[in-house]
Image 1 (tube, rainbow, N blue to C red):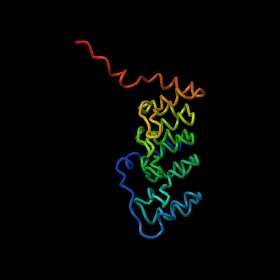
Image 2: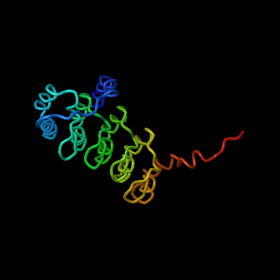
Image 3: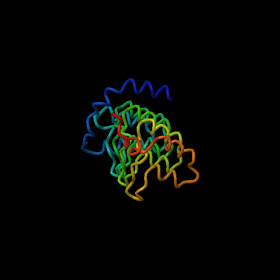
Image 4: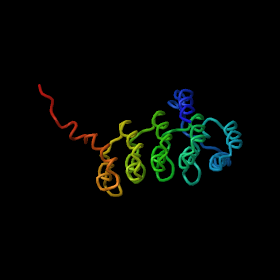
Length: 200
């Protein structure tokens, strides 16, 4: 499936960089498209995409969810790859402000995280609770996803709104997250990294 993903990326990278914002549709086509993805009904999804592109792929249902987020929430590699190939926005948030990357981190969907990052997902975007994908990955004890997010530049010292804790703080407070804490501790806090004054 990863080979499929790389083919997807090569085909759509330029398209995604200039993808338009989600369009508003008359009637029920947008809702029907999201429902088709929810039910994994490929024939119906393709029929609706053929009628309504561009914009259909990023339609938000009444509950705030998008087709891409629904596919990611069930760690569905085939549907996630399909929707990204159709130009789904890797940064379009759904219910609660959760981005596709946050949703992938929440369910431990490693392939999804990798693909989203390669397609330009904003690594430090947060939801309405101030949670970033990295905070969620730490809370869910997903060391491989933590590693990928850190390598992509995620800030382990951004704090959430709920508790005022950062990913580093959550890792320190969880005795079962020692391996995750080691990954984070290898990335120095920004203040420490930039506090020294260069010698003249």
